[in-house]
Length: 116
Length: 115
Image 1 (spheres, each protein chain N blue to C red):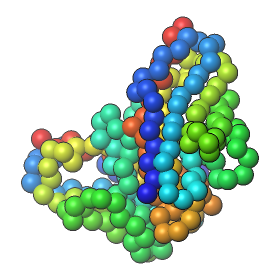
Image 2 (image 1 turned 90 degrees about the horizontal axis):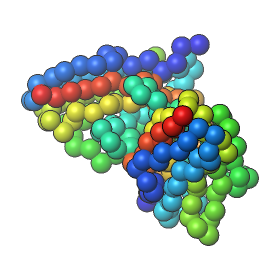
Image 3 (image 1 turned 90 degrees about the vertical axis):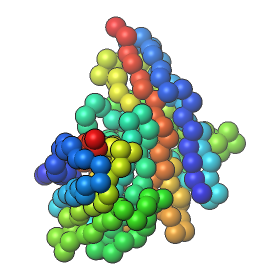
Image 4 (image 1 turned 180 degrees about the vertical axis):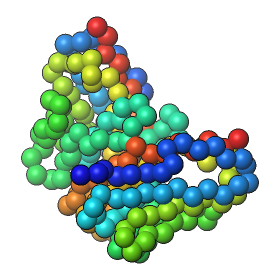
């Protein structure tokens, strides 16, 4: 079984500051990990994914995440926040194989607000 | 290219009623998945269909059912609605059945309110 825990339901940063959104995972098999963003009244957009290649993954809009097996973490970072980054962010995990690699298990989300 | 299309965008139903939600995948995509997102929570997996066959089902009661048509569009049906079924229902399509080889594209969802 797979699960993710997002630490902090709400993160507030100033424009231009570092963004750090935390995600820890639990998985009985090697995991694949994802970060999605959701803007108000919209669906989910994939920011980046880790699928066992490079542990540092670069995504869209300047975001990146690092897979750390020893810490079971996959934190999302961006060096400088923009006002347009304000949204809800979801970490998700999927099994890398076997019979359940067809579904995503999401965390509860972290709402990012960016202050001018 | 059109993205994943869901209809309706909003609807209000009364407890005990039945509802049908519709999803049209991206052209060429053969897999459709359904997720329920309750306010303040992450999406939760309900079903996946690939090539018109159910590939997986989440931990939802039998009141929830779905199907996929020959053109790969899909319907999600919920019977005997409860207040707790109020949520945003998201549809995601992909070329293939697994989450990693093929990217998932989500629609904007259907907001269901049960009163």
